[in-house]
Image (cartoon, rainbow, N blue to C red; front, side, top):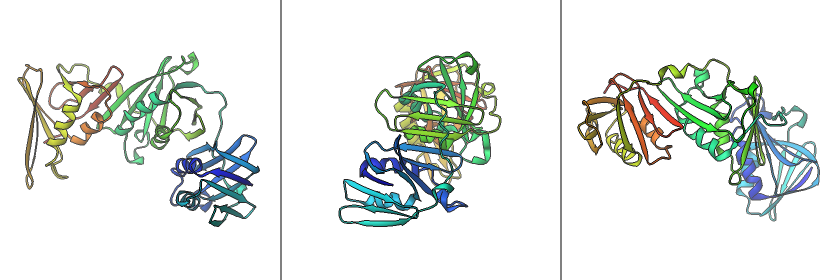
Length: 367
């Protein structure tokens, strides 16, 4: 194998693929990336056995086709620190030579035959959606998923497929975000009603894809895997096994205290009210009265804070406690200037209607 790379293009591909390479692995070959040159072009591939990525490198010239498997951390560091515009990669069965204008690196390689297949190309896509719209949908649901992978189905984003849209749902059991993502083309009848749980790691990768404006991302799936194809990037991921909770049951239907809020003003008020909270006293209290919403916090060894915000409200007073991080996480990804908050009894879930397609539900806490 002999390839000449534009260093910037190569670094972009390596950075994307190396993001899934495990720092520790039972087999050293799993800490490697595969560099290939064939009739399809030049590609960088990687896998952690759950997710596989193939990233084509457009600015590369193949002088001799072939493949080489090399440690991801070492080749990434060499490319990142290089000062050359063009780097030459030349490999035989046991070594990879990387040459610049004033440098020469010789890396011992792994057996190409021992490297697991990273990609399952499913052919034609089952659905297509605007990449930017899907990425926005991911940003508005991913934050609400469980951080611990021991929670299985909650450590993923639910996709519910309808004829003209996908419902994306993320929850950790204490809060829930749902976003409707419109499809570019209608789904055939045999796909309508399908439910997939995608791992957090996989949807995080989709969020990082950089492509041209108005790009579409193709998505195909079966009972066990999902594949994303967009521009130079192909991602294959196992689906999460398990049952996603019936989230519809926790969406409040009868919260009768409805208030419209300015998004930026609310974000600022929550931030300021939480400045004197501690790990032991993490909650803030939101009190609603005639024409005013008060955000307050108190920490025994720290002090107290209060922020007043005028609102259009004249109903009965109400006070609810929140984890401020849960509110800030949602407000940071809202694109609209105004949101609507719908509240009921102090111990009931509160609904934030962030847009026509984005709702957020959070359980109150004691303060």
